[in-house]
Length: 384
Image (cartoon, rainbow, N blue to C red; front, side, top):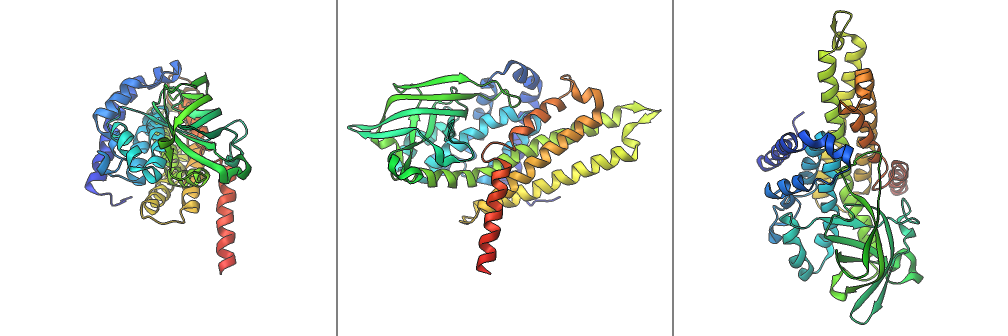
């Protein structure tokens, strides 16, 4: 289908695909097996100006929005979503700063983010706060000279590797979620250390780590936005970022579809390529239809988010849910079509199937997001 991308968007998409095929493809199996963070590829992304895509022009970026970011994530994920999420997590960690940070904070950090000199991470999740993000316990006590952070963040993408962290912490415990605030915290700040690096089913090239704060003093100027607005900012951030998770799932599904098509075209059984069998053709057709439907929904949701609309919760949640479910179905069917070969590590499909699962879980589990979509339906019904 034609999605009427601009010339600049087409160039961004082509650049990301070229980098993925030339730099990521030759090492993706090694990165997955070794659970190795892809620093050389991160440098290539920086040299190719991919980190500038999502940063505003006034801070040395290209001024792209959710759609441009989704195009990059899709193409990188088509080859390796573990590498792709290391890139996308920097955008996730930057959005709150870009949307709500002071001019001083933006000028201090965004140019280095745009240049790819510093990676970012976003830290909301804790042992008591997953799908229920209001369950955070990390505190930021106002003291002379700033805020004292104490607590532990869990399952943080880019944890330990990023230089900059957006932290959501309680500045007023008595108010619950309404007492949360957002802070920019730099790696190396006294009192800020890292816990264990997680071993994962998929996206193994991506670093996932605990963040530990023990009397970590953060300058008062590093607060993002107003005190008490942290939870609201986090929810707005997740609405904005979910099409990007959908794009990750889309890229995985597209890569799996292509691998399955190539294999079934070459695999000879009963004297002919198995792609000539009607049942195989039917499965490939269904996979292709699902991938294209996911792409249409993601691009539409991303464009809607970029329009400045306020009511993007439903469209963003729907795009993420649909695309991630498609990724699981398509990778599962791709493994099935390739039989024993699909199950082996010599082929990329078992990795894609492992990688796809997380897209149904993080940035809002699909079960929770379906509830969010249903809530929006109820609101519209009540108004009609």
